[in-house]
Length: 113
Image (cartoon, rainbow, N blue to C red):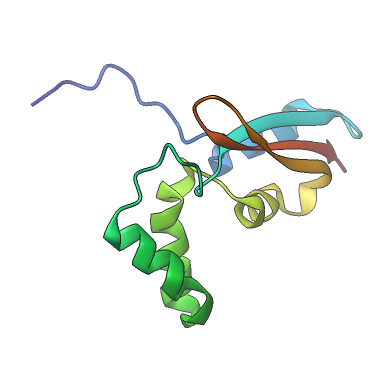
């Protein structure tokens, strides 16, 4: 079994958002990118395709579980997850999808309230 050398948090983990909210002053900006779950760099498995298709028609508990699976619990983030994680502490100033040579990203700039 491979030994884990460090415990890397998810890019949009709630703990990171909490820390940034603590460090920033009011009207301070938080700029970041995340890999979008629709990125071509994420393997298009049958399970992922089925989960993506079922998401809009799923009941709330199943929809939450599917979203967690599709975003790998925050390793990837779409616009809805970003808005959810930033919550009431930040206002989203801008959010755009940006294509790099490797990934589809969500680029977000948020302002602390």
